[in-house]
Image (tube, rainbow, N blue to C red; front, side, top):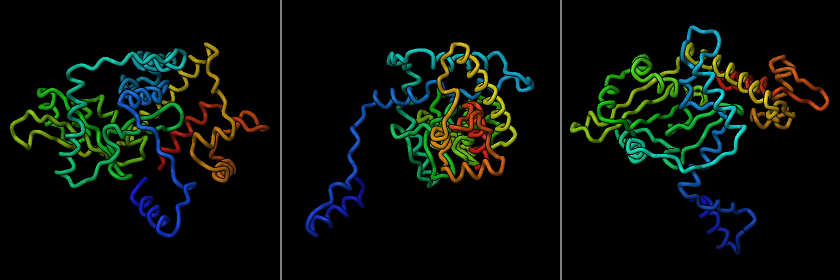
Length: 300
């Protein structure tokens, strides 16, 4: 219940009683383990921004390179197997990052004056279609976001030399593709890469933030590889007779794309929508709709 709800409730009581039917039910509190499990479940079978770099090796190749095929196979296997949460292994370096990520964002807010939301346990997985997504470390309004790293001091020293997207691509390629992917998914034109190490003596060296702009050419390449990976994943699942989502009804298509019937009708009338594989009832091939979802998201 927010402040406005409380004020409305108090006014209602003063006027003779509250309409309890309008009050939202409180969601049960979740533990850190619950949040982690939900996060893992949401990512099953999906290509996620933190691993997009595995699709972008050997850029001159027209077909998926070996590493990308391995990654795609892993995503198919996730769909085919039971999810077992073994608790996960957290190294000292990983724990350091978890402990300092929010501190880094607070320091970033102090230096820039920006308000960063959806951080820490409030982070949200943003899906694009049914097979792609990413979890920003934080969002700045609807225009931008942040990707935070709290690395070893030697690694942080390398990151201090990053001043733009080209530097990030050269020094930490995996994070470059993660940031480009998050911008693509969230529909943003820029993002902030942040490296934080409070062990440095000089305050100016403790936090380093860089504005990274969207690179249209690289995002088009990433989209191409994602489409190839989704096609291969579909083939791998079909070979096991396990892809029950190979087709989508009209209702499922509208839900996945987050559009209404009127919008769908307009797109079809303008020949801007994939052709259905069945007219009555309307059904579309999942892979066609997922490709359309990527194209739709990148145009906004």
